[in-house]
Length: 349
Image (cartoon, rainbow, N blue to C red; front, top):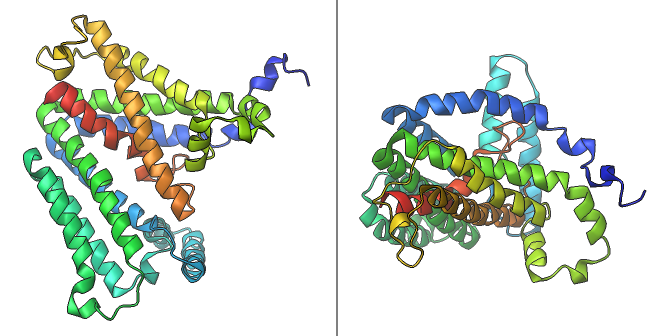
């Protein structure tokens, strides 16, 4: 088929097979989230429940340390999936939810590893409720606490290879815990409009990246076959983290961000740091919103790549299966973890 044929640029139909599930999840989720964001308590509850689920999914993303770990995880995963597949009644539904949240790790954890997870969860939840100026101190002491658990007398004789677990949870403190801290701060200090602005820009940017990435996927693969050595440093870096990531996808996200920012009915406050960047001399509200959308979409990509690198190490495609067509909750929040911090300091700090 000639490259000039427009159909050669279209993604194969199977690429879009998850669209019905995606639309169903979005159709139910977006109105529900919008309603919860209107009130402080319901928005706080939404973020903290999402936070707890993210912690459980993060536990399931601990990289295996060897062949035995992989085999043990596969055995338990098979049991969990079998339990999830059985039953069509309420008990069957409970089994499915349990299998999704506790997947292939929980039953195989040692006492030391379970203790590390409890400490990680406690520290993470605490970090979302402390004043922002104390956050660096909290991250440091939480990381130290995780490092010291293995020296408690009860665990000194443990043969568990916990160093990978400790490092994984320490990164989780920086990535997930800090991310949720700032999401809650934005809702508290900026109200429903500002947290809505952040969610709209970042999730629309993710959607733009998905659509353009899939539309150009066939063309991209066709032109990259047999040319791995000529990819360039950046594309090789990108593919090493996530084989599914494409340059068109990144462009789609970066372009959609500023457009989404313009569409959202909110103005950048005159007191915002973005308005007072002296070397840019940004006084035009439209230009401010375009720059805000561009920055958030670019920073959101970094958050997405951070989670992709963790999934790559753990051998997982998604962080979970709780959201049909979208993967897990961490998959939906990955870009928000980094974009939320930047939004807070650009707009509200």
